[in-house]
Length: 562
Image (cartoon, rainbow, N blue to C red; front, side, top):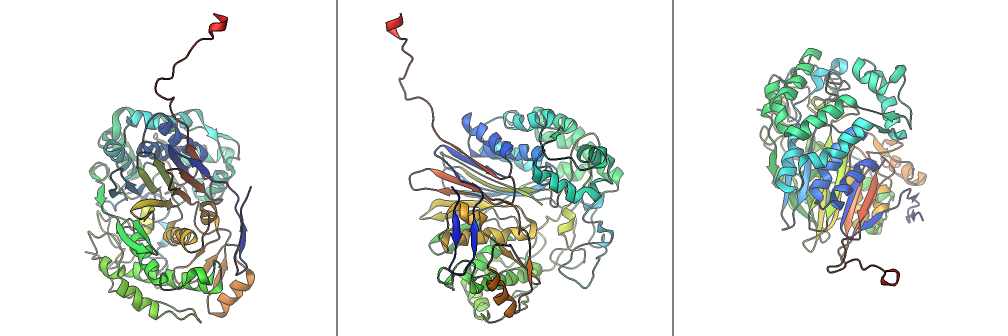
């Protein structure tokens, strides 16, 4: 049975998927085979960390357009003792990188980071130093309970034997086909015969299966050996600047999450260089001063406030949020109640505004999400990516690996908070959010979608807290997004409301979807869990119930037949 949501403002939508429930664990990813891999670990006695890492390795096979071991990301963990930690595996600029290595395509447009010739978006110069493999292996070793070879087994199996291409993957290949065709190796894999692979076709990745098998045997140390050298050599021969030393020397950083209150909940998110924690908490502080519940989901007032809050956040993000090792990020100021009061007081409910930063500018010295929980108290909320669809859009010869194109996230203009600098971590919108109620987990959610991530995750949380939606409704509800110019809106918002937004001065831009597939888990008072994934990706929730036999139970033969 599907849920039909209708607000007083006229917005109406019908959920397309159904949630899953479980008592022993829950795995929600953006592909059914990845969710199954995570559930396999839980069924074998592993914990949520084992399940999450198994799911992520499998996603590199079945969602190659979104995530890979040559990418980067952030994982937000809650441990059984109640501690929260963030494992930062975000990519860094290579040692040979320079602030002026790219020429801006539109020098006067501060919101456009594209370089001339798309050199920072596609191809070898767009590749930053990868962090995923090291981060996943370290997380498993520290917090998991199963051997690396066991959690990698499903990924190796699907790479070697192949899997059926989903319509979503096929459409992503079609979208990127022009760039993919430039590299013979990736074209042979994804554009057989010169045309994008069709839905239902079997995709086998033999070279990648061999690479995964090597990693499963030798661990992340392979990055300091033959595999790391092969990756660096392949990137260098293609014209890139990532070196073997860059790959070998990469280090993860463990960070404390940022925390903030919202209507009786405590919200925890990653700190800089992720922009999510700073700016979601900033926006929640601003919005808490308004009666969103009374205004109603999808009303002109609610959408106007969301748009204005997003514009404020992006103005401050552009000015001051970046790698804290290179930029002095005024975190305390940005997430303070006093600063929210100042910004809120300037909001005009009758008209849209152009917002500038409210803090001093700092100076520089396409993605997937996994949400997994177990019955031991572990929660993993992890967003990982190679950035754009298929990253740099070429294969490293002989490895089956698709590099990231993370250099696209740096500002090609020198002297800015987000300018390129050797060793500098990219800034990300990844927003693995965990919300507590009375000190206990209430929700965990996150999603892919680039710059649209943290604003969309915040809207999912508001749907639950302010608008009283079910978990499935909250992840599937229509979204809005802007960073200062056009206000992107999904189709289900009421037409009259959108006209009211235009009357207030917003440039409304209808879009088929805003951001990617949201994954979420809700934690119930009885210890059970509910998982939900939305229509914007191949998301699947798998809950684990049941358990082992009661102690003392044994088989008794039928004595009547003896």
